[in-house]
Image (cartoon, rainbow, N blue to C red; front, side, top):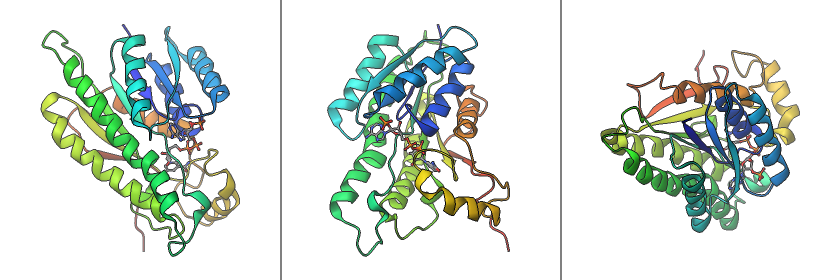
Length: 260
Ligand SMILES: NC(=O)c1ccc[n+]([C@@H]2O[C@H](COP(=O)([O-])OP(=O)(O)OC[C@H]3O[C@@H](n4cnc5c(N)ncnc54)[C@H](OP(=O)(O)O)[C@@H]3O)[C@@H](O)[C@H]2O)c1
């Protein structure tokens, strides 16, 4: 029986990259998306084609900010696969309108926090309870894990994306909270912290980052790719970090290194 991963926001971008890399190491997949069914189906087909061994991938629409959708997503995983080995909280949106902090609106704040912070918190809670339930004595090799996809914005200020930065900072704290609580159940929790990654999210600011990267924004002078993030998640999924929990894996070309 293959291990099973549920990846939120896996229709496009980083989530798709994670799904493809997990398919290559033989994970069965639940590919979640919000509205883009075509992209989700394409990712599903590409994952099945990329899988070295025979893998199953199913698509499930659910808005992670909506409680009944989160429950439906977990129920879907349970019904289709009967187990969950890895939850990747990847779905996220950027700040609407990229408004200056002095013009930021409450409506946009609530929308973003619902998807980027409240969604992963309560989805992880649901998944963790089910993982604990699955941790029966006879389930010997079962070592479930939870991953949060944060951002360099969790510690880097962009005053025109305050809601995004604050939600990512809180998501980073969430990793430590769940890691501390779930260690006694043998569930490790990790933060994967991407830098500037080429995706639809960064499409509108491509020219800006092309210039910044060329000027030395990151020691490794290139855009990150969804595959780079996927490979970090593979290291976690393969249990290569068994004595590490609450740990941050930076996938940022060295952006986090301070230099003088
Ligand atoms: N790109 C970067 O440079 C970068 C850097 C650091 C961190 N990140 C983080 O990485 C994650 C993925 O970013 P990305 O660049 O891959 O973004 P993206 O290309 O815009 O893709 C976003 C994905 O999230 C899904 N999604 C959006 N709202 C959702 C909701 N309410 N419920 C469920 N799924 C939802 C989308 O589904 P649909 O296709 O159905 O719309 C899509 O699959 C985000 O958490 C982002 O903050 C990105």
